[in-house]
Amino acid sequence: MADPLLSVRNLRLEIATRRGPLLALDDVSFDIAPGEVLGVVGESGAGKSITGTAIIGLLDPPLRMTGGEIAFAGQRIDNLSAEAFRLLRGRSIGAVFQDPLTSLNPLLTVGRQLVQTMRVHLDISPAAARSRAVELLAEVGIPAPTERLDCYPHELSGGMRQRIVLALAFCCEPRLIIADEPTTALDVSVQAQVIELLRRMCRERSTAVMLITHDMGVIAETADRIAVMYAGRVVEIGPATAVLKGPVHPYTRGLMASIPSMKRRTADLVQVEGSMPRLAEIPSGCAFHPRCPVRLPHCDCQRPSLMNAGDTLVACWLAAHGNVAPTRETIGHA
Image (tube, rainbow, N blue to C red; front, side):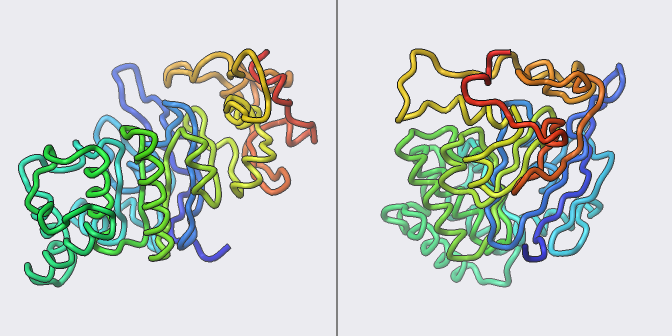
């Protein structure tokens, strides 16, 4: 693997409450190489989005970083000032969020937002910025781009707004994009178009991507590597092919088994029993053990660290004991 563009090491986030701090992320580590797409998956509450929020420096109290380091292009960035992070966030690190309507300023036209963003981060004249904005809108598939520059966000459809957000994210040619559920608010047909557009733009620019989603179909089509999160921790990480075709952690296998198969007829959909624990109720040992159909006696008291399991790293005692992970039929039936 090439030297990482983004390196997250032992990231720990806490939420301050009157009854004491709650652990939101615990010892999260991963790298993203230049031009690589890392898919981050898991249920709601797994910690995917706040990991991305920490990377782009947008944590709001009472959430705070209490441990670990975040490095970008070899330089630590988690200790930057707010102003330094603001300059980095538009120029070198772009962001695409799930709701394009809230990502855009409703009081400014599309063209003004694009021009302002470029002029803050690039040495460019207003005329050149506007010309570049027209080119970007055409590149992301906006019809009549010159006319659309003078439109306000509410005058555009959801799919068009998300394309505008992509144009904003790429307008300063960033080296890394944090894409947090970029297709959730869109129709299925538009989702495929936006994902293909994101993938093409990143490929042409060799831009790295952290793609946060709960949609395994999007991950399968886009990601080079996959990190699976559960209860604030990475429980499995490895090449996309290995994780999708041979998942080791019982939670990962549960996610994969819950996807309906076109080749298999069944009366019931497979599900992972139970639900994600609340932050105040994360169990001891392996956080997944209350839901795990193949838990071992010590899973409830000893927390596993990431360990080698073939082509992936997995936080599961099954891997340490060399046991075979459960089959599709056993997942969800503890």
